[in-house]
Length: 270
View 1 (cartoon, helix red, strand yellow):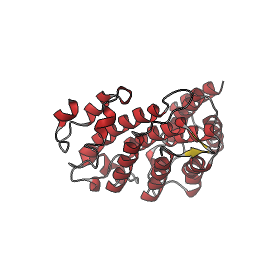
View 2 (tube, one colour):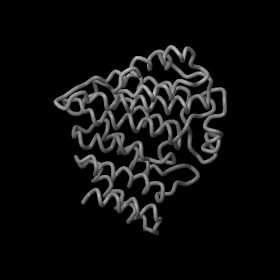
View 3 (cartoon, rainbow, N blue to C red):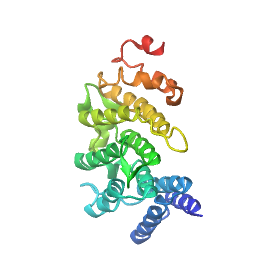
């Protein structure tokens, strides 16, 4: 039933049916309730509903989102991921951070930096939820870290070229910021660290969920970065060992390497 509710909210939002502010907030409350549900299908439906709801409603003025809206969405979600002891809640809200549109994610560097810092902390191999590690939270945080990078793009001053085909310049005019060179470095390091997630439990090698997500994230961030710069930090030799394992999809690494700054490509493919 809750998954159906999420799907209904998503379709309602995509249809852009006129809603009052009160109705919009009530729908957002319903989505939040579904995000902390222990069932992954319910959380996934809630994430899709959140993305559609925030993109279709909750307009942002020329000076950016209001303090109240930031607190209601971004601040609330990051606080829950950082402090909540309930694994279902951290999983859902870590996933939700990757579904927020850039008008709320990146109105300024402080807000974007806070979201990135929260997710980077959540992907830590030794990170605990309550007293135990939680593979789903780490995996969802890796997925969201990648999604945030794809959503906001890389700023021109992150490198020497024109990033994202001019998208960053357009984003700046729209009142949002992109990833700086420092942000890119932080995310690369976090994804590379996730390649070392070999945690296991009664289900087996649950760390592989994070490793696979991290490899795909490295592909995406590398492609974003190379459009903005001819230098891609710290990727060359660190990604290759994990790429050799079947669990980490060597094909993903193969796709990430053919960029101008990565030499010795043939040796990696061997």
